[in-house]
Image (cartoon, rainbow, N blue to C red; front, side, top):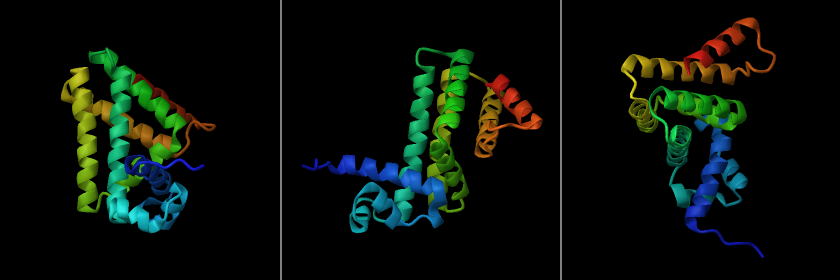
Length: 181
């Protein structure tokens, strides 16, 4: 007997399916048909839940940033200052190594930021990350800037799979990033 999911549970399933599909092909390259199929629902029901593909993308991006913030919060729990900053950095590095979908979804969100509505969601989510890191680390702006710059470098390196037989320059960058976190 099939278990009937609530609308909220179904929305979560659709957002998870959308994350995978959007991470793979981006906003323009992803079809709502593929998302609906992955989520096990009809395409009309997907539109009933989210209205448009762009609204679904925005909800997916927002969720991705919220989950990143939650990762930061779990990592820094009970910590302050530099200890919190290092814990967040280590958790982020581990996430990049273990969840390629999450990384690719982030990159697709940045790439789609030409659209003003999507840009607003990306800015809000990224701004929440910066505000949290600044608050919990009690760091000055140059330290926060360096921390997030290192994170973006890690995004770029992870997207190139640099841990798979890294060349010397890759390893030097990775080692440098690890020192900065």
